[in-house]
Length: 212
Image 1 (cartoon, one colour):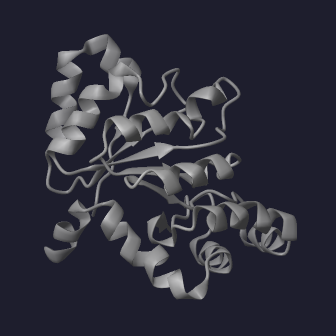
Image 2 (cartoon, helix red, strand yellow):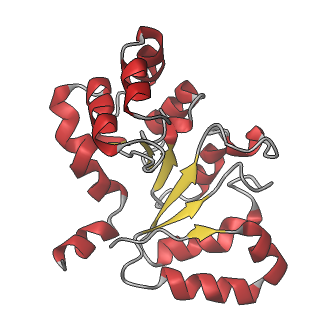
């Protein structure tokens, strides 16, 4: 199973070198293919210096960085920390680090689309665009404005080779969510979105799969 450990910047800032040693022990494992930054759930921007050693480790171990983008589920969080435009500075600073913005940065999907179009190293996933049961997902599918909200960003970015499927399970049932995403993506790009693009966004995943 591929592993994506998350980073707690509070512990990192508090414990310094000791926490970095703990993080590196995890990131160096062969089953780790990426690392998760919970932007918006901690009071740090993704380009804050506290994360810099982690990004350098990610480059060292050929890992990709997944960043929470968009709205959060806590009213104690500040949305400025999870706005997708904050990723731009990081993407420019680390041109050879693959970055995946989760949830298309919803509701700022057009801002995310600009980042994907501009930066070769920025990808997006489509997880968590609907958090509901099967009936709730079907309702969104039937809502023209809700679907166009996302489709407009996908068309603007015009980078279907950099878009990844994601479900955010268990917050949404997988099979209905697959159909939801299929409706968003032109059919000729289904193989890329549902499989091929993940291998580009997470290069270490190729070797991991070959060993299974």
